[in-house]
Image (cartoon, rainbow, N blue to C red; front, side):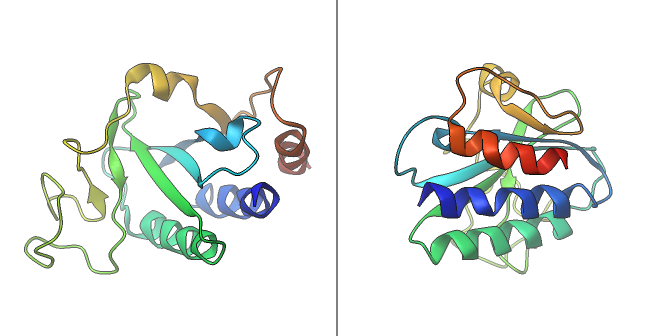
Length: 157
């Protein structure tokens, strides 16, 4: 499962970095450890304050769909330019106030495709700072799993 999850990393990074308003793409969570069977792959994307999140949310849904085919998950966590966690990408195709009664975003639809369920999920500033940067600068760290290192080598090509 690790290899299959990691196989989507180059595609996602390549696609996301072509979008307007993306400042940084990082990886976090169990996929960055030696955990043999991680439940998901998690990205952290820094976006400009006025970035249209629709295209990013669309890519996030594609990634989640690929992961779900393996009975795994994927999350796209978001930070603002100051590096503070602001939420995740919305998983609905349509995102507007009042569209879904089950939406637990604090400001559903106020910023389209921002799922700011901060009462449920939040990332500390330390977690944000410790994420493994993939773009615009590829961060190299000691102790990363060999399979992740191999995928990171593909990003440098």
